[in-house]
Length: 193
Image 1 (cartoon, rainbow, N blue to C red):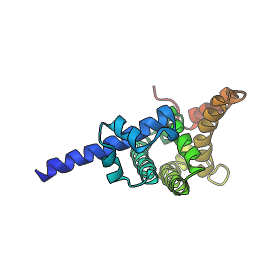
Image 2: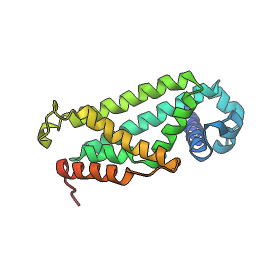
Image 3: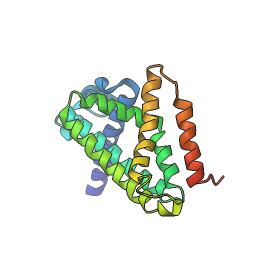
C-alpha cells in the first residue's frame, strides 16, 4: 500500500513540475503562482505549497528537473557516432531555448535561480565536452588550434542568439551562421542518411 501511495505522490510531484514548466513556456514565468500551477496540475494549491514552500523552491526544482532530463537526453544523443550533431540539435531545440530564456529573465529578479542556472549550464557543458573531447583526434582536429570547448560554446550559443534576435525582429546573418556550422558538421561528422 505504501508504494502505491508513494507512486501517487511522485506522480503528483512530477505533474506539478510539468505544469510549472508548461506555464512558463506558454505564459511566461510571471504566470506561475501556487494557484495557477495547482489548476494546471489538477491538484490543490496547498499541495503545491506542501512540496514547495516558496516559488523560488518551485522554480529551482523545475530547473534542476529539466537539467537532469536534458543531461540524460544528451548522453543518449552523444553516444551516437555524431555527438557534435547531437549537441547542435540540442541547442536548436526551440522549447528548450524558450525555457532557458524564461529562466534567465527570472534570474534577473531571483538570485536563487541564477545560481542554479549557472550550475546546470556547467553540468550540461561538461557532459557534452567529455564526449566531444574524446573524439577530437578522430575528427582530425587539433585541440590547440580549435579547442573543443570553444566549438561546443559556439554550437550552443549560436542557436540561442538566433532565437533571441529573431524574437526582436533581427535576422541578418542567421542563415549564413547556420550554414557555416552545417558545413563544419558535414566535414567532421558527415551525414549518415
